[in-house]
Image (cartoon, rainbow, N blue to C red):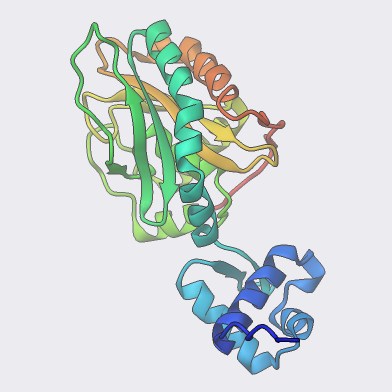
Length: 265
């Protein structure tokens, strides 16, 4: 009987994959470097080096206070990229309906390692508007970015952003960290975020999260237009419209998202 040749493997890659899988499957009490090393049959020093290497690539994240390791945005970004075409296909008719209903531009944005990027949009034939496709936007100065800050998985994102300093783009840009945190709490309660020309004076908008069945953020759905058409007075009407539309994008539908989640600057 012929024995099939063993597929060549790289030990360091094998160990990294074992640790990555262990992090993904670990409960809170089993997510320390020591417990992860034990679960993978590795010594602590080796596991520590591999985990920190994975952290450098955004694949895992360590809470320095508790020592707990969790999956990082790099893994999420890879997964989202794999299913991006499916997500865009599911969102397209929703964007078209939202644009027809409001008469404004409807757009879809997804999180990337370097920020938030618009991947699809539908512009009403009755208007002429600049395109945001392919653009990456600042998180604190756009309604889409605020949704990512409010509903994203990384609780350290807001403190890091505030610590670096909130850049001012227009006279309405929020540059106060405490005020931003308070605004994000309101975003979680209402289910949508708003922007009053905070990145570009001509772009006013409302955005809501597209969540998967586990409540994780998949994308951000938004409508936007100039302040002459999309005004503060319209936000109370447009907000629920966008929330309703976002809930129809993903077949699983979003569960109730905790409204008392808090973050600190």
